Image (cartoon, rainbow, N blue to C red; front, side, top):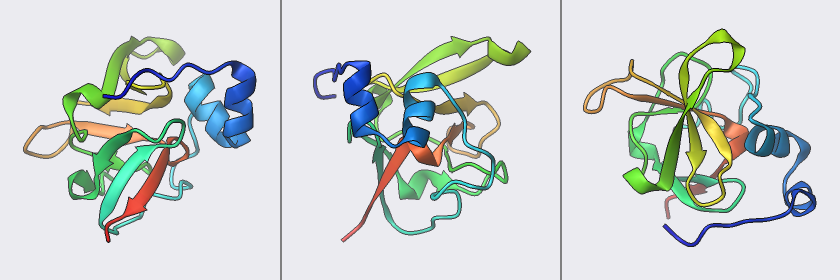
Length: 132
């Protein structure tokens, strides 16, 4: 993982769209079935919209029916950090970009083989680089 990216709130606001800022920096969530990548089936890599760090590959993406892009594993274990999230009266595991600490979504233990995990991500927190 590259060095940590630490920007001021003003720099983040300049770099990100309002929706990206809300999700990545304020821990927001986009509405289900509205994100740009929820139905994307193209081959390629998903990167952090905040810092460009590679996060997920399209071959780990699957249709979970949840309304958000879902993956069964990150690109490497060290590209994301997981934190206990007790907001909204629930206990969940929040997923953040290990490089910029941007909120990506949550991981749940109800995914497919081989991991049994569902990394449920916000499209607003991701960029997509198509495979050449």
